[in-house]
Length: 108
Image 1: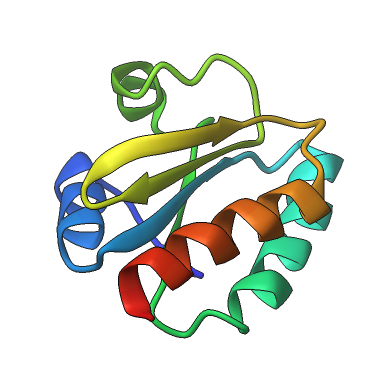
Image 2: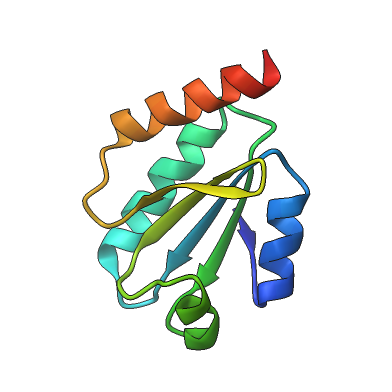
C-alpha cells in the first residue's frame, strides 16, 4: 500500500486508476494494522487496483476533508467516485465480493 501524505497525492492516486482504495489509519489503532494486512492480501488478486494509506492522526485536515471521524476507514473509488465507505467492523468477504463485482464490470 502506497504511503500518502497530502490531498494532492490522494487525488493523483484516485485519478490514476479506475478502481482505487484510500485507507485512513492510525498508529494507536490495533484494528488498523490487522485490517490493512487483510486488505493488502485481498488486492493482490486484483492487480489493477491502486491502494493508498494515509494517517488520519497525522493529517487531521485531510481526514476532515474526506469526512473521516474514526479509524480505520476504507474508501473505495470506482471511476473517480466514492462507491463504498467501510469502517472498523467491515466484512472482508463482503468487501471482496464488492471489489470483484466492480473489477469484472470494468476490466472484463
